[in-house]
Image 1 (tube, protein in one colour):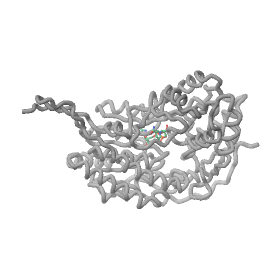
Image 2 (image 1 turned 120 degrees about the vertical axis):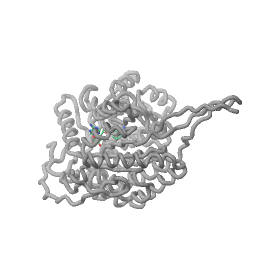
Image 3 (image 1 turned 45 degrees about the vertical axis):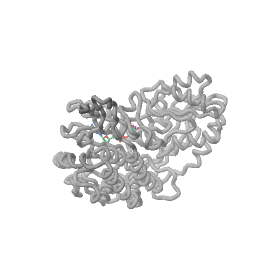
Image 4 (image 1 turned 90 degrees about the vertical axis):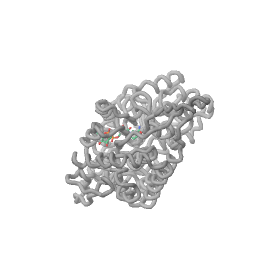
Length: 485
Ligand code: NAD
């Protein structure tokens, strides 16, 4: 059987859309442009502004000007502004979702769903109580903690879930009294820019700014002297550069980076329910989720039954263009990522003892489609197990001794998430708590509510986003002591 399907290259689309950036309350046209590619065709279909250094400086200056008044705005009013932004997202979810599908690839219902979920997340975040704390009032002295905003926050987002990741940063920055300059990924700028157009009249000028461009723009943001904090979501390699460049101006940094999350399946598991949950949490968004399941460790007693049950569910996934209602999985988002996943599958084919149980066909010549795959027979040091694949390929390993499974789950630089699947919740919890990761689950993986702090251990990140802990990372703690007369 051939592992590659060649398709004729379709005719070239003419780039059509030029979206403007939100700078100082106005929609500003680009002076230079980047091409945006539709991953379902592999062809450019739109242009987005490639912000100049001067345009970034204007955005940062506007955010800095807007900061004192915004920081002094009562928190109820800041909450109401975030709620108005959320309402605009819902109002324009169909149009923003269509752009998101075109540039990111995910099925349209998922793209519209992402836009609506972004609105839900924003509302949940501004419901959190982030007030200060009275430490002492003993008749002599009152001592309390308050949380002051930092100034201008620089937000940098990746291409996998661009609308949610951007809007979570908007909600956190604004609710805590900061202003924001945010840069989406050059692969998926249009949906974020469309949000900017949708919200321009419900946010005071300069409080939110969206600028698009390439990686240079990201480095300009992280090095900018007038930016106080960077909230970065992306890869480990870029996260390291962000941390280095923030050192010069002592920027506060939150890094949400990659993961290689293990799922450990115990022998007593409910096979069908676990297969359903594990497949969903591995292949969501075509496997391009930071805290997706990326390695599965099965107890040998249930190996065959679990693989059969998971394979059946994977075969039911329908890959295709996101604008085809029959598609339940879109293409991989960009060519580089597509080639990386294709190379990992090639390496599996050349590994003695490895078997592709289902899927793995790489479609070439058009969009970046790969049939979702389950792979067995790999050792823990093979690239598909060791590295973050960030694509629709699930490696399945076997264990006999739970201590061995835990050690192998932890034998990684990553530490974003991990899960244990079992009918014995107490046993599952005890094992889950031994996984060296920022989030662990029993009989579930992904999908925390926004009051739950999220972030990574080890190389998967630095700090937290969401929850009260994440919110407060957008603030500086101030201890105040006054004598009581
Ligand atoms: P990436 O690191 O290549 O890019 C992320 C962003 O950083 C983009 O906007 C990019 O333009 C910008 N950038 C690039 N070079 C920069 C520099 N020198 N300085 C500042 N910014 C720069 O990541 P990606 O390929 O877009 O995203 C995929 C990765 O993101 C995966 O590793 C995934 O696990 C991770 N991710 C993590 C989370 C999380 O919350 N932990 C969520 C989603 C994705």
